[in-house]
Amino acid sequence: MDYKFDNISVMNFIKILTTCRGLSLRKLIAKLSKERGFSDCYPSFYTKLKNGTIKFSEIKDIADTLGYEIVFKDIKI
Image 1 (cartoon, rainbow, N blue to C red):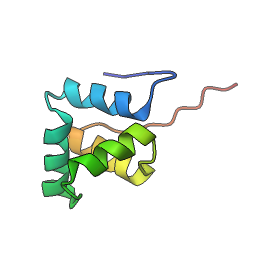
Image 2: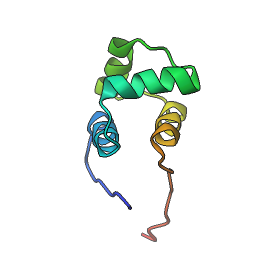
Image 3: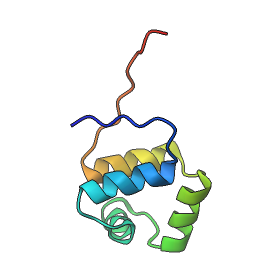
């Protein structure tokens, strides 16, 4: 399934993708900690999402953990 969201915060986007997989953000961070070596500090993770300061590499790890692929598509402006 393809998802396209315009004008949505990183936090809300990750929340939607996580919920679609039947997980909470807390369960996601536990899974990331176990599978990818992320810190299991939920407040730190939540702050990164809230402030939009999360790294692209972390977004990629989240996508991989949730079973998503990040694709950039040429929209020919």
